[in-house]
Length: 428
Image (cartoon, rainbow, N blue to C red):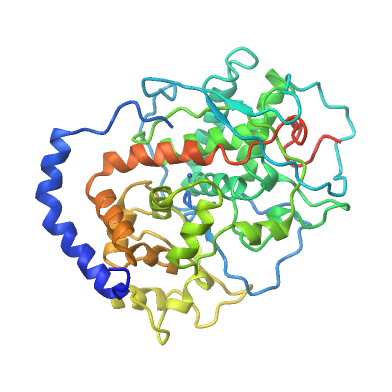
């Protein structure tokens, strides 16, 4: 089946969707998702005000990435539990230490001396993540982050989408070390946040700043910016899913000191990747094909710039649903550029909800990116799309587990990490 044309594979997947509906419904009643599943394209996608005002605008033609839902979308008005609850067990997670990055020019630091960080393992020792890492050193840490995310997403759900995307973009470049937060300096004028995949579309920076400021008041020098991003992505998933995606995030990360614009281009998968390229990209980060399909579900929230998908609109050949293509043509210029590049929602049905609608859109060929449509180009991934569309609770558990897995990519050690006093600059 590897040679099946994309349109035929889409039709086959749709046929499977309807033919399997009754059998899957029966199986779902007989076997509920495992409660103990713990714990991002991704999604990548994966989403705040733009970076600092002095950041130069990117003048190139690299495609824009998905950015958050439009601000005027209504905020969720329901009530939320007072605390993110946990699946049954809360094991510790141990992952290989990241290889120290090559030395880079020193970045500007705050004038004040930072407080002493919490004890770190010896250089080269494996970094150990665990649930409840700050239970003693900063008991209110997770609650403070959650409140910052709650406040932001209640006013603008797009910031929640932005934070989930930020988590992905941080972890895929230099590992989960908050390198995406570093501002440009005289020594390093081109950090990750100015790279085309991130600027000007990446959002959520001020939410992380607010959480860090609050944390520094109650437990200075204790909570890393990398952990704040991971907690915030978990909480954004919780709020945008209407509390259906509910998991605990292990912590204990350190912040990195290296941030290079070129590396974002090297490691973040662009929207025009085919399936083979996507699988290889995820495999390089110890994520498998199932993680790819599961984390791609984050494309059910947020918006995308027209320049990311106009290559799939007529007169260009593609397998996009003609009616959907016509709708997009009415919203996008023929040749988007940096000054004229509107955004459209990625999911026209439930743009503010983190749900399984994305997979239905894939089957109906109502998706924006080549990388989305690519999920139907093989039998293995097409079957996963159908399963996720039919069994929402299973996808929600898988998404939570994949977020935790992604949040452990290439952890820093005491040799190349620290706990920043301010998330936008290194300590010294």
